Length: 357
Length: 268
Ligand SMILES: Nc1ncnc2c1ncn2[C@@H]1O[C@H](COP(=O)(O)OP(=O)(O)OP(=O)(O)O)[C@@H](O)[C@H]1O
Ligand SMILES: [Mg+2]
Image (tube, rainbow over all chains, first blue to last red; front, side):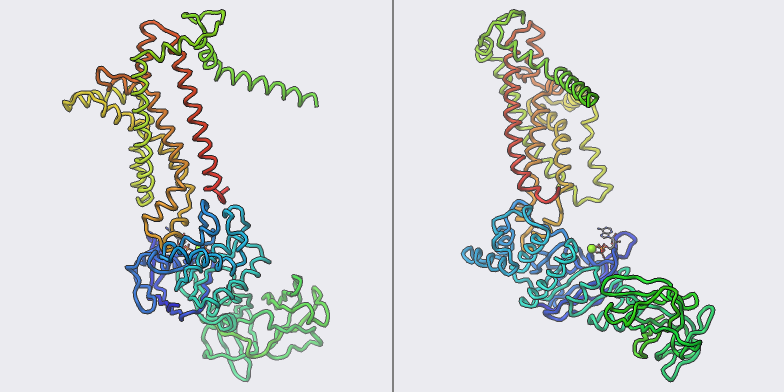
């Protein structure tokens, strides 16, 4: 219910620039994930949007209005912390009612809205319990109801699902998605779980060391990562690095330290430039090697080891000292790969991703 | 098996010895307060005479009242100051916080005797007469660190995110303080206040040096009466004080228990 702009916001602790001139425009009602490794400044960014921290430079705008002078309690935000931070001395219902009381909702309306909010997170029957009498997942849903009930214009969620076990987390993800879509609230969702970011968000912001590496839809960020960090952080990738020798006819030739590689794909780089390419392991097709010929644009190697993880079988192939990872869903393999087997690796030209050097 | 049994018996004996060491004197004193003999001699013959004497002893009762009022004022002021101090401290830089801390905690490591004496000298130097306000100030200075110790332990475990959450839900700083911070601190405030109360109630040296003539507190009065001949009245008085402390302790314990149960909730 509000458009949010971050303009050059920066936070410095001592000599440490934790958030470094970040720019971000978030559409009204969309859900943005902020994704990045631990310590990259996600929480700090969120806290600046909330108003708990004041940016050392730049400004935060809600609906084009700078909110620098607006205190936290006047920003109309909904927050869920990783620790949930339910008020321990209040019941579930009192926790949810708290925000309504502060917003001057008439006393007669409060019980109805509290129950309504609790019903939406399936917690109505726990209304009279104290927070410590609830499981982690239940506490999390109460925290969510408490944040949503005040109809915030911006919702800030900081790793609010990370304390849950895998199964509950996946359940909560879809429930969260439904709740947020229903209420059409602009949402920032901080996580370091890439899968969670993919399934939940309209857009993903990948952060690293206080800067934004890339923003885009989950598909854009996954399929066209800009650089090595993004390609590596979201999913897995095989990297090929070297000097471009030639390119054309769907084949790219690069010179690595000790050999020349021909890769299927195309590039915008000119010969002589340093280049970096990536391929997603699930796009690599693995075939048994027949004969001594290696097709142009393919790689030849020996299976070094195999990782079985249920739905996916990964083979790590040794291509003359360079390890290349391939992945196949269990059912799609015509036969089990064998360790030590000689194989040919190939992919469709579009799957070769050129990264920024 | 037998080895285990042996250590078990040994352990029990040890515990009994320690308990005897700690509580036997108090128990004997309480017992003697009901004994008829003026010289605490046996055989034991039950009487309530000493309690009657106590109730009629003007000087002692006056001193008891003074001690009570003094300790109450000290306890309350220590809690208020202590709470303000730890809350304010959260907004200070590490360094400044450390300096303030040392200043306030210092009286804990200076003998009360010296505190009392030096306060007296200072008051004299400044040309003031001894009066009750100085006594109270002295008591507050030495009791404050104890309140602070208890309060600090509580606030360091108080999750700052609760207060932040309150703000994000639209509450101003005052509402947040009243509805979130205060309830969370309440048990520590009660415990800290009680501790300061006890330190003050018990204090002899500070009172001794600073007390204006014509006034006295229990510790001073007891010291005097022992000097001029001991009566079992003191035993009776001590028994009353112990009983009173136990009752207060039990009440504080009950309040804390119920409070902690509802307050601390998740953080174990
Ligand atoms: N109050 C503070 N004072 C000094 N440094 C801080 C403060 N808060 C955060 N930092 C530092 O800023 C950096 C970013 O912290 P932040 O909490 O934003 O990381 P994060 O991306 O949320 O990490 P995580 O995934 O572990 O929660 C860290 O290196 C942290 O040590
Ligand atoms: Mg964080």
